[in-house]
Amino acid sequence: MENPPQLASCSEEQRQNAMDKFKIIKPYLSDEKTLNTIVKESGISTRTLQYWISKYRQFGLKGLIRKNRGDAGSFKVAIEVQEEIKNLILNHKKNSITSIHRKICKICTKNNWQKPSYNQVYALSKTLLPSMKKLAYEGRKEYQNSFDLIHRREASYPNEIWQADHTPLDIMVLNEKGKPERPWLTIIMDEYSRAIAGYFLTFQDPTAIHTALVLHQAIWRKGNPEWQICGIPEKFYTDHGSDFTSNHLEQVAIDLKINLLFSAVGVPRGRGKIERFFLTVNQLFLQDLPGYIGNQTNPSLITIKELDEKLSDFIIYHYHHRIHSTTKKEPIHAWNHSGFLPNMPESLENLDLLLLNVAKPRKVHADGIRFQGLRYININLAAYVGETVIIRYNPRDIAEIRVFYKDEYLCTAISPEISDYTVDLKDIVSARNKVRRDLKKQLDAGKSIAEEVILSKQNDVKDNLSKSKSKKSKLKRYFNE
Image (cartoon, rainbow, N blue to C red; front, side):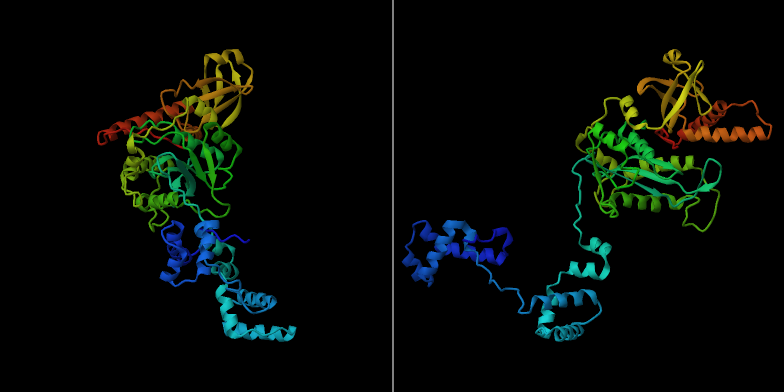
């Protein structure tokens, strides 16, 4: 015996009809009335009532669902004719039903088939799904945009889901050589609060190293107490770019117990939150700066270091305290909701070893390790003079380096000349270029790269002291590679 359809697959009308039948036979099922009494009251035949009772006892309420006719929705047109009609409709977007009817009649005459009526062709055209027509008329991409199911993730609490993405900024700034160039911005955002956990500015195309550096900054506690976003996210959502799908990032995610999520290849939807942030950066931040691509004037450009400082101020002191149009909350307050406590790594050193993947081989000399014109020392290096080691470093701060010997962590070596400063690799590059220019001019020929860096840092300290009079909190700067 054929089972009746499931209630969930039936229409509201069918379910209501089954309920009406049940109400009629319910007094008999509960022994309140006899079958003859129900026949007299309802006017329904005994045979019909007995059939309903039997079906209900066998299948429950779904047994009372009225079956559709077997030929409902079918066409009294040969299958081959139906297929030809569908093909004509899908392959001739601009043709009217009248034109399709004439074409199918010619095909039927040629193949000695029975011709369908105009009404039959019209009725068949109405059975074609809009999604099928979209695919046939406008292609796969438009079909996906209109009909593909999108899984809308909505985070329920801070650090449940982080998003990451890159974009070239609509501004020209000066690079280390003083030439105008367009920088890239990498962002990691907390989906729940829309707060920014980390960012990175660079002139280079996005790489796995850049992503790891932003993730390092995002996870660990910031030096500025005003920027409180930190912790290990439960899920990390990105696209399928090579910088996001690297083996290194996958290993980091496994070790930190982060669930990596990727958008569909070639379909970067579901990342509208972070794209709206990029739009906010354009509209509320970049448009007022010299060098913005949309401006007609061409004033003196700022450096990438100055852009970095301004972007830090914008994120920490403006964006985080601006009510978000979707959440109706300030991002920093939403992230701190209900005394949230982030899940942190065991130590900064462990996080460094996972994410600082900039590795270089170096030889240990009697006076230490030489790198980027600087000297790095540690007492543990004395036993490894003449040996080749691997160093790992953070381009945002190369005042110290991590030293490995035969894949084992050996020590952290510091540069005594600059140990009191946070030195960006870009500072070293700029200092090297300045020393080279000075040598060409036969000026300050005896000045070393370290001395040039220290002089630059001292000038920065003086500038910061003058600015601190007008600002309550001192912002620790994170520079880029």
